[in-house]
Image 1 (tube, rainbow, N blue to C red):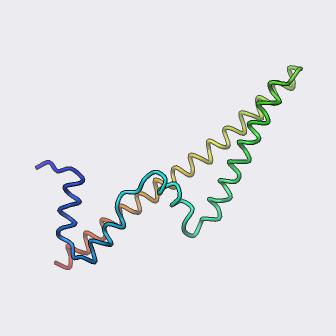
Image 2: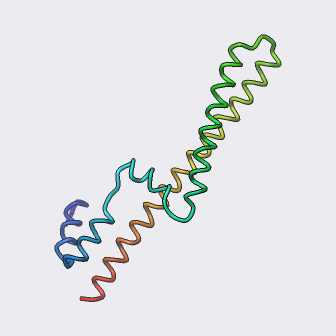
Image 3: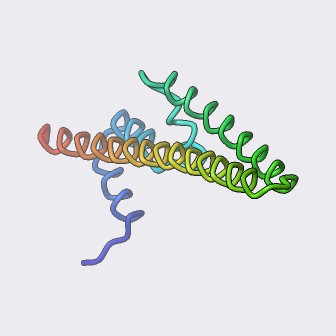
Length: 125
């Protein structure tokens, strides 16, 4: 008895009342853009906004380091700008990884809410 996710969702949707089905539809799959923007909602949205601004600033720093690296004339300058550029791009990567982990956390919480709804519906019947 193999069922696809769409078939399972349809079976669940048919078993729910109209009000529960509307709520269940709101908990459906999100696009990548919706998940990305969803990080900026909730209690910690200020932190996410701040880290996005910091990631942008680190990226600008990286671009500046690349330009200065290209224009550098001494070995000391080359090493300094290479290290600074590496640090900047590493910082941007860390911030982006953190945001992706938050997106994953939000997705898991969304699935847990769907399961809670299903369990509550089954408990009523």
